[in-house]
Image (cartoon, rainbow, N blue to C red; front, side, top):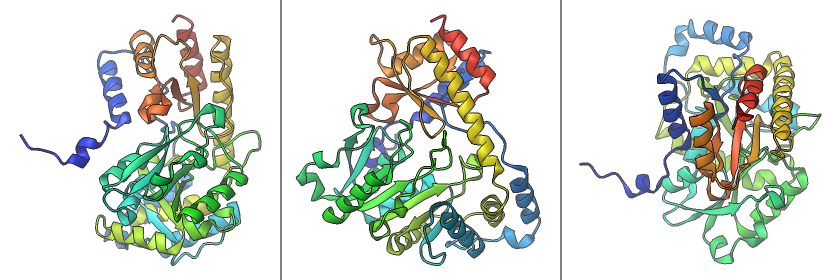
Length: 386
């Protein structure tokens, strides 16, 4: 038998792979699964983006290796989008790096700054690559509990000084996956001051900024004065333009941080397929009505789901952003894994157990609004039988 590395052994099983195995098994048995698990948009990519890819892919010039830095036309489109959306000025030559989806950039970033034994300050529960990237870089995740009593914000003042002396990175993610919590700029101002005081690099994951409701507009961390001195922000076209399978995102912010990530990536990959980059330009510069329609659709689904759950006595509040609903396990006899297993076994409903996002996610379930309103109503009907 081959022995894998200690780092690989330290990684927990990737949650979504485990859920996918359970779903495949159930479907092979012919069961009618309602999948409220992984957050993968069920609506197609807008047609003008697909047309841009088709046109670009026909040009032989796009078939060659792409530049590691990404095409200038894409970097300029990202800069213009950030300026229009957040009034944040970015230099397309030094402060923007296109990525093969923001996930790979987030996972690779710790390689640029962590030495063996250094700490990352990681929210818990969280998107798994924050921990995984830290571990693969030889670092140690220090878990900052996100508790409902604190609005699912990390309590920075409770981090021990002994940890802060060894910490290099601080991950934040709002609108938040999995809790759907949001923040105002006051929290970001506190994070900037905290990072400067303790010489920390802030990694802001802003993947869900365009998915919000009732007029709420999530801010960018980079909007806050001094943020660009300490931060790199990650964004993605996956959720905003229904492009999860296309794998296109970016890192932006402090030029030294962006350049360090670029150096890591130049040793790992050979850039993004140029036709996909040009499709990204079409997404960022083309018609944006899709975003308003997307938010309207998810808000309708959110309201149907929450109204249905509350009619069962589950006591769920409406999130202001993301397409996730973070729900307390309604029966205290079950932990999140067992309750999720019960829903799959008895009702053919897939949900994500909160503990899969970290120890402080225990006691919760995450449901994604990525199925039709009709299927959500059917799921509520099934839950009534439980």
